[in-house]
Image (cartoon, rainbow over all chains, first blue to last red; front, side):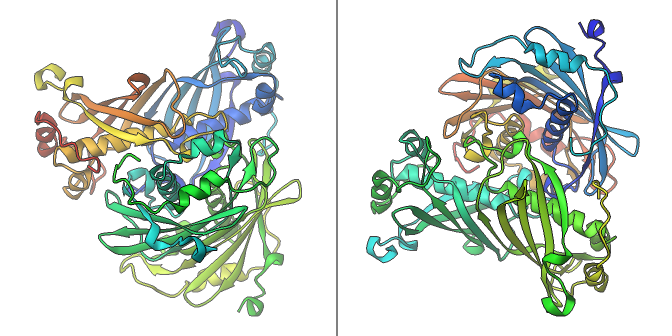
Length: 150
Length: 150
Length: 150
Length: 150
């Protein structure tokens, strides 16, 4: 399905992020779980740039909680670095969406990860279809707005 | 009102807590905002030991969000220390509750803080009275259960 | 000393921030301690815009850990809001710096806070003077760079 | 190698944990990245119960940062639940250690995860061998101390 929709790294979005002291631990590097917080920030930005903020998805009665996630740590990010968080949809089916992520500092790959999400109905808390509106947004290939606050 | 009800340090509860790597930052000490997370853990334990878990308060239609908080840092807590988080109610009125906290390591005071909470009605999100049940629980002076998981 | 140096709200910096799901709790609002993380982001940005990133301060042998902090919650921030975090130096002495913060959404004040910091020597971990370089940076009154990534 | 050393679920440790408000998000469930924090708590406890606290490993000149991690979400943990975090070493080689985790509430499996760690020399920050002392600790099969604070 990835190929059908043309999802993949060529259809990505990048969020810039300045590493906080709060992200670090006593090893002097970013604490391992904090990258998932960055992934969330990039994922939210990716959808807003396609004009489908997640608040709209939720208001429409659908949530997409995680069912699985994974991460590989190649090199740690450090305090005050301005990193690039790259995100794209690597797969989408009728009931699931999979996002992929890469974190770079000055062009060097630091981190690679993914998150799988299943659509659920907010009212019943049971599985449902990924909203059509959501899939349409993901299929939009236009140049993404460079607004840093999106 | 503090005096009337006899609230104060003599009516406290202590929660033991093992400092995590996740709590630290690159200065090698606990990141300053994480103590508030510890305060929450101690506050929840304090109420459960009085047989009024916060889930019951919420189920009864009342939440007690913070209106103010403060903290003094005397000496930082460090990774893997087993600290004592002491908590007590320092004041209570018809519409507010104030908790006080102290963190110790091997008897030495590291941190002192407080949080003020206002009662609100979950449905209307407007101010309401502190539940009678809540005040009754706070007035219980019995020896607190030593169960570490409460 | 505030008046002598002309520090105050007129010499502020604003950092825009998009509220994450990670910031929220089950009350549906931002969890109370997460605002301190935002304060740190704004404080770091404030110093970088004065061309003194905190990594430089640390490399020079000085750290400025917190000695005290306080916060008032007027109205909670919500998921996906784009808030303004305003920060300025409200006081500075030979050995301490005090920062003040306000968080706004669409012009409405949500949160007000402060953090006090004492200068310490990284090697000895003992109190030291606030670096001259640091005070110079704070005294710079030029229009701040609007670069969102600073 | 797992079989050679007899590592596996039969050689596990369990840490009890009370879910905090701080762990939750506006979906009313535990925010997905917070489980890694729980995993760290359980992993530290596991080593202390084998009389090798991580501070000793670090003091000996070795750190074991993560190289990879993964997690599957079967059912979310909720506020104030007292969950069991089960941890064991699922593999160990000369240069890496792999931990596996399961989170249960009232006997029901909620979460399954793993973390891979590579040994590095604190001084050179280069790969090194997993300390012998560390492997010895992991091979200890005695009944684990039930001390909740370990």
